[in-house]
Length: 125
Image (cartoon, rainbow, N blue to C red; front, side, top):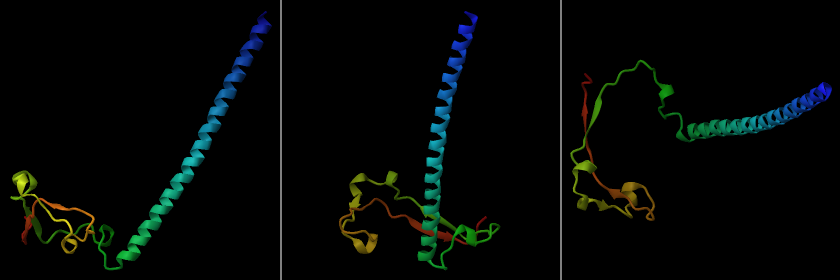
């Protein structure tokens, strides 16, 4: 009787080990698939960055191209008196088919809500 109980316990342990092993193999397969996908995405990202650097040319300015201790020489302020929250909604004018101003194709509709004015101060303190 005791021997039969021991055999049954061993079978249960073997079944549980088989189940855990199959689960481990499934996880390893998913890991390999996801690593391959990550590798492709990173590779595509580097390729897209290289393409954009090539198309922008050597005169483009990026964060990596200037010293991190540089200080600004001027400050740009935006006057938002005519901001969307301060403007009458009836004054919203569609600017559709104005490709010269917006650069969009005539099939796009652009709604110009406000036109902020900019002022430049040379003191940054």
